[in-house]
Length: 426
Image: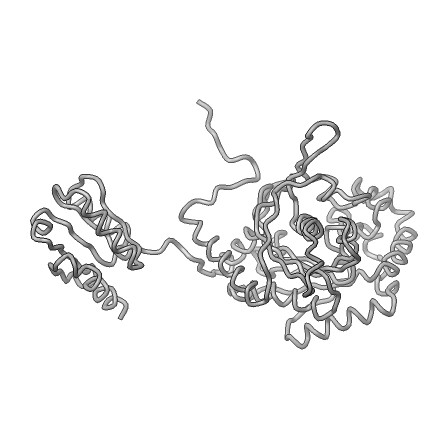
């Protein structure tokens, strides 16, 4: 018989691990509510051209997408990132027609990239992200970074730093592309195949190469700052001033260009400095984008956002020794002794309605076996439904910590348990 396993680059989130995920997801929802962001849910697959825009030089588009044909020349692609689908939806549903801008959205869900799996990197992975669409301001850029920074700080991550750069406006990038073309023209044949492609499509992406980072041409790259327009310089200074005001520490990294072609002006990446983070140090990253709303048929509007890998966040939190949620202990265990029919289930239902985590024995088992379950579930109190007690309209309740045991009328179940559980809390 075939031994079925998870596909390479995927993982099962087992029940005992799911509570960590729920904690992360709850914290994200709560913080987005404080910042005024609304949730959006888009399909996990889109028309391929949503992601594969004209002359896109990113590795994600050129090498990592899961694309399948629908016949007659049409194709769909499993989403490799969240921003493009959100902006497609923003335009399709004319969210830009709302009276109040910017439109602030958050999303969470599975993404798919066909890349080499390694620790903290999967082919099916989960991202949380936000998009602030409609207005352009250095203060909005800073607020978006602040939201992500506060999120990871709320989890207790202390060994992180913010890397930030500017790609400038369209005029700045055009000028810099020309400078890079000239700089790399004598070296391009010595670079990796991807860099040869990037040289033709978007020489800015050469700066993101991990293969040729030690090549002489990479060590003496002209500074983007020299190609920035005055407007771009001023905009970036105002972003940094806002981060200073928020007391968010940062480092300007002139080689930071991010992995997607649609970014403009501010780009940023928050990384872990913990020794165990290794090559998978990025916690969240993003930037501002102009032109993406127009690409999907909307008006001329700017946006800014970031994406955070949830697997990576959990991994880095554990590396720093942060204890995330685990399965909660049981409050009440309902035991059945003898022929008592549906009574245990009725008692358990009453306990659950009162708000207590309750387990219930629903099959014939010995008293010893049931008490083993009480220990395994770490129950705080036990409700014993025995034949004699039930005939007298009574139940026995035992407090595990103190071993105190009382027999009370069935109507006193909630009152007695509440007193016992409160006693343990004190």
